Figure 1 (tube, rainbow, N blue to C red):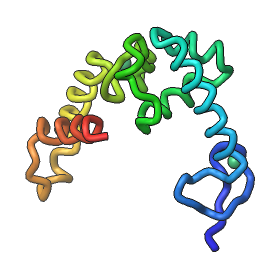
Figure 2: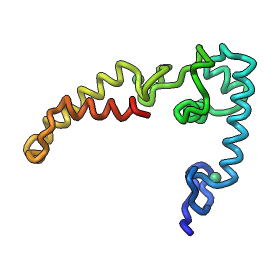
Figure 3: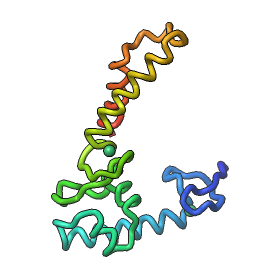
Figure 4: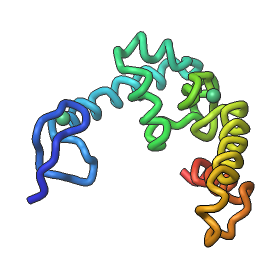
Amino acid sequence: MNLDNCPRCGKLFAKNFRDVCPVCIRDIDKEYQLCADYLREHKGAIISELSDQTGVSIKQITKFIREGRISMVNAPNMSYPCESCGTLIRENHLCDSCRSRLVKDARRMTQNEGKNTESDKLKPTDVAYRGLNQYKDR
Ligand SMILES: [Zn+2]
Ligand SMILES: [Zn+2]
């Protein structure tokens, strides 16, 4: 049996496919149910309202959206914070300005590495776009 600390409550538990302990799974499912119920009756809710009304953290709601458990198709005003700056967005993990910054950073990083990465034939832009595609594919 594979034991690990639950990232949510810190307790030791036998690893499972959800990566949190059974108690937390139940909590998270309960939180999801609260959100789903609220959204069914308030389709135009925004994320801060949903969080206030259900007591579920914005971070957890963001997770539900990313996992596809909460569908934004049925919640036209729903959005979630950019992972970097917190601006509310509806797609990808980052807002447009953070994404373009990421591209720039990746380019600069590759240039700095210069000598050490001669075996790496990728152009800086390739690296940046690979990063972006990872976000898109989820
Ligand atoms: Zn736990
Ligand atoms: Zn941002």
